[in-house]
Amino acid sequence: MSRRPSKRRKQKSLAAEMSLWIDRLNASGKGMAGDVAVPFTLPGEEVRARVSGNEGQLLSIETVSSKRIAPPCPHFGQPGDNCGGCQTQHMDLAASLKWKEERLLATLSRMGMALPKPTLYQVQPRTRRRAKFALALKGQQWVMGFRERRSHRIIPLRECLVVHPDIFSSAVQLREAAFSLFPEGTKEVEAFFTLTDGGVDLDLQGLDEANLDLSTREALADYSVQADLCRLTLNGEPFILRWPPNVQIDDLSISLPPSGFLQATRSAQNFLQQIVYTGLADARHIADLFCGLGTFAIPLSKNTQVQAFDGEVRAITALQKAVGSTGRPLLASKRDLFQRPLLPDELATFDGAVLDPPRAGAKAQMEALSQSSIPTIVMVSCNLATLARDLKFLSDRYHMTDLYLVDQFLWSPHIEIVAVLKYQP
Image (tube, rainbow, N blue to C red):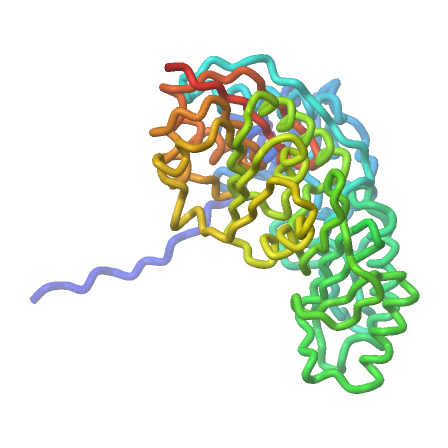
């Protein structure tokens, strides 16, 4: 007779209080002491922490780093409210930018390609033009904010140093009007705000339009006026349009699809456009892969022929409409580049390419590009790990001439990267 395997419960690691010496930051901005991660700490600090497994909870700082500052936002981490929107407000912005540069070089150096010294660019606070807030009914009041670190709990916000003031003001007005805007029984909604040239655009996610009564519809209309929204959509579907939510991309105005993708800040978008334009200055036929609304295709097409591809139907439709009868040499086509990348024989017609894929990267397209001989390729990415993976495909046939780090995600570990690559036979 065979015995059944015993069902032993896994015991949780017992927490122990100990002193730790922080020697580095990991990719998410947590201080590391060996293999123990302690949030809100910096290299060179000796701390007391309650440690369980590989995670430590900061109790006190015995030796303070010269890079440490008092967090400028009262909601941040310790000793604040523990808002999960920012991770590194205990570090000054100059030190944060230096840390991001070091992480960029350390990660990309593993692919075996010589790296130029990166050019650094950092945006100003309160300039983010896209943000998703959570709103929830807690007892007898609605709260609005971002979620607590490693929790679903919403931290009620009184201010935010990241988002544009117009967005935050609209979010506050939404919270104040919530009882009249949301049907009885609604417990939580998400509000995706985007600042367009025509004002604030809002997509409310979690409301069923079919269940809205007349008084709720009227209240939503009143809020749209009071908050000066240009458009209100519910789960991506049109509800109230006061005027078009247009955004200016170079010399064209384009209608933004609900929750459509834009670079996080306008200043970063302008900087990225200039980098790409300069990098592809010698090209006469350019492929814009994962083109979105045409952030790069539109300025490039002023002086050269551009074919733009993306799998997002609404983005391609908006781009096609904006180009319309302008006569500029820009052809936008819907194509899922994850499933149907441009193949080497198709790529052979281009002498320049720009890629700005989602965070998942562009593995299938990079495999095809690695078999091409396009003279110049410009890679744009907001995910350092997938960028390093994708660049590896080109490391044997291309050399990197320029590298840029654009810090448009302040007080977070995220960065925007641009690499300009030249073909070497």
